[in-house]
Image (cartoon, rainbow, N blue to C red; front, side, top):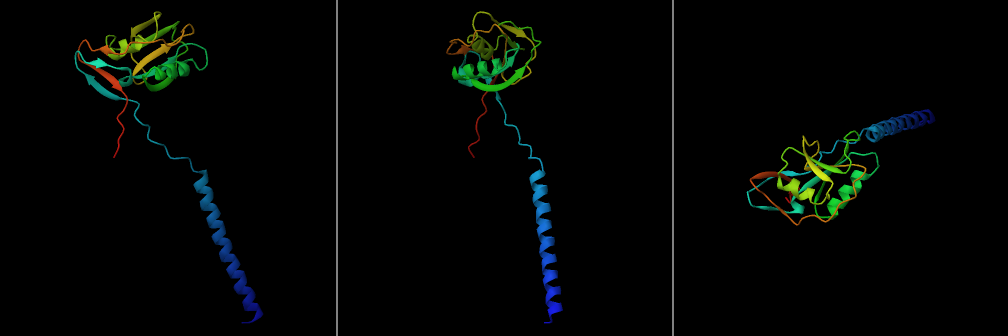
Length: 173
């Protein structure tokens, strides 16, 4: 091979490698700058039918807490206390215009055994209000004067057949 052919061959090899390098950089950049795929949100709870007379225990009840006041972290602290008392941890929300002083449970079925059980943890100033619940499970709305979670009942019997929101059953397959 002549020196001119060697230079042309070297230049062609370098050009080919440069094209490969730029292609790799472009591919890597597109992979890195692409947004993460949306993960499917796991179910917070599953619907469970409770027969009349059946007992509902804290670990069968999912509870979500809404901050109805202006104190940061009030809902999170309350949900943590309820979880430590044995209730299943649901979701958090904010409703600063809720006009709740102590605590309320928002529920369509005010005689639901899960509602009555959760109410026992909220103390004397808490009440149940018939209204749509925006979050899954029993919805507790806490206000500025909420003293914290107390010792609740061990169970609540269903006075009639009821539907409660229970922790999801894990798929072991």
